[in-house]
Image (cartoon, rainbow, N blue to C red; front, side, top):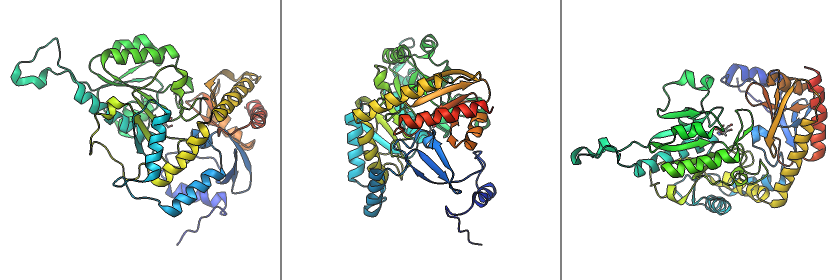
Length: 418
Ligand code: PLP
């Protein structure tokens, strides 16, 4: 039998086919989405949903942005794929523009956040391999030099951190539920509490290759780092010759009200990873590296068949144009503050905390956050949890104050129904 599933098929038949044929890695609600416009999504039955998820912090420009659609269509007609064996203008232009906008000297493109972090890990290991030092406590006899070099392989990561699901990125994602079934993972990973500088100081040493940290933790429950923590990590990395890696896959590209979240902490990393919103919904990952890290990378060290293809890098330039505009960032800050104030003003005994920066907000509940997510569907509200008890709000960055009013209204009803 040939399947003819299109967006006009009923939710029931789509859900039945998914249940039969799609690997069960995600639980999904009982409707199927068909199209989007602005900050709203519509299901196959025509029901509208105010979208506070944005494809999990991806669709920064919402749905149907004319410039984005135009760029993707034009580029698709001109050239979809040639591999990384060849030069193309969109690839070159996006790399140049990301370097110009940041601390970085060079960029490697891939297809997802996890891949961006895999590249970060490999580039850091390569840099550390070159820069490992003789152990001063144990001067080497000339004929066994290798035994007296301190291996510079250790990775430091933090509680509640999330860096992806590939084996390398999972190794620095310290959650038993995600890690335990897949052991053994990478060795030499040290895990310390987030925002605890003293604990970090106790594990960062000459043998540390890199420190992996999200300036604002996303999946772990929307926890911003303190400026002192990130500044302290920078100092510890400098002191011990380790690399500082900021994972801005979720919090980067305008989400917190600055183009890169690190700008608000007064610290620059050696490596920065980006993904989710970078190409406006098309799959992309980017690993931005400083000149010193770039100096360690040679032909053959890493690669990707699809990474940085013409369509995604052309789309990303549209996103970068828009989100790097100071007026756009001002909008994110203003609507973010308005949203946060609205959440704080909600009068429900179930709310135990509100936190976050820009349009990356979290509301902690005394009941499982998934209960609120499920209740939201009936009210035309899309939300997602971050950890078991936090509702996460990462809407399209084009959301306006009147949408926030609508969201707060619906959320009031959702909370009252629990
Ligand atoms: N890093 C962070 C901070 C993330 O939030 C995520 C995904 O949620 C990832 C990495 C992994 O990205 P991807 O799902 O695109 O592999």
